[in-house]
Length: 174
Image 1 (cartoon, rainbow, N blue to C red):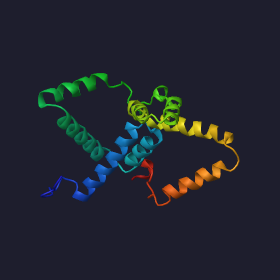
Image 2: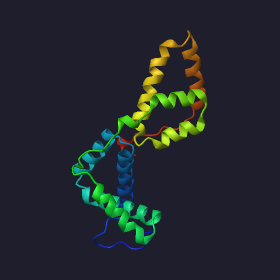
Image 3: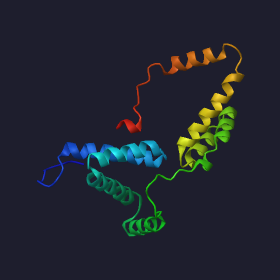
């Protein structure tokens, strides 16, 4: 978005960009069912009394998404259907631990089934639980490794990912 002129009642351009980034962080936490990050971001916004600005930006993001995904005559029908399906209590991010098939993911990875792995990840609404289950599975397998293999594996991982950039957590405000 290019800002050509700033009106007296409008937020400054840098404040709009900051609010967009914060709205995106909130949306990512919601999309992935990360309740802790979502609650943390909401608490920060409420503490700073920035609810109106971020709500406006979230609405703008949603409107842009609908505009780009649907024909004009269909967009309003989609929004009305979403409004009808909205839960009465919107105080929490809805998470679905039951759809996270970590065992199926581990089996697909072991079998080298790339398409199945992608399908499992894509069909899991809340990847937080899927990755948590995968981590739990790896932790359960660690004691079964022969002596010295864990050190070899961690050394290989460090070699492969030693130069990886630090990616801040969503709740850190990034």
